[in-house]
Length: 351
Ligand code: NAP
Ligand code: ZN
Image (cartoon, rainbow, N blue to C red; front, side):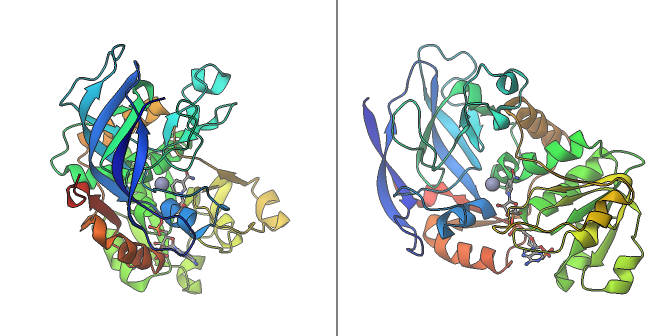
């Protein structure tokens, strides 16, 4: 298959800083959309990947899966995009497109395995996929989102992963008027969960380990904010919440949060600690509580989320950086020193 060289930022080994490399992207196929990348968010999953938290990776790895750009070329069979349109890609760039899950808009659970936007086997080129820390992307139009014309397009990029990862469970577990929703961890995902849950009409309580974020949570729209190390403040929420989204990226005690649930409530894990979590039997049998999980969201639901956020004027609180600052950004993300998402201005990478 013919390929084209593309400038990117990547790494070939764990602990090796990201640096400029040249990757090969497949030439535009009949159903493909090619676009110039304008902005790409930095998700904690990018950090997990380059640290090897999810296991070894085939070098080189080019992270980035919150990708927004402008269409530069379309294949002969493309129906929904034309040159000059805004376009976006999140985590999913391919799936079998015929299993029960794909047919139900749940591509993230595809029977044959989903192709992620980076570090996945590319079924078409035979190589592997490279993410959005690069100048261009090529993707089958079935997996390309229509990007609404957000006033701050850079700040909308994090919706492509962080946004859909919290929107999907909020919707599935019926966040809305009369529902008391807890949000655990105020990072990229957590701060968008506050904004989206409020826009859905829920009462939102956040739990944070960072004293400085207690006040900030209210600015973001939370009704209540609790420092999770304050046992007295935590006790007030015992048996109060309908469900809790857990966005914590590291090991932590989920039993504390199961006890904040009302009967039939659920703690829904979206964070990806790299060690198994322990659950005490009594914390789930009492109150018939559930411990559940959720993985991003399907393509149609991602489009729905983008349109919802556009309508409600929701974007991420973002710190825009140049690609040359990406290693410092990862160091700061690891320390929790970002309010609340880094977004790379890809114009900083010369073609
Ligand atoms: P992030 O911006 O780093 O936020 C994570 C937050 O978790 C931190 O801001 C911090 O919030 C809290 N935290 C971190 N370490 C902690 C610890 N040791 N104990 C308690 N709290 C801690 O990360 P993100 O980009 O939002 O991603 C969050 C997690 O979701 C990551 O593991 C990521 O890989 C995962 N993820 C999953 C999916 C999915 O589909 N399931 C999709 C995207 C991301 P406070 O300072 O408020 O305590
Ligand atoms: Zn992500």
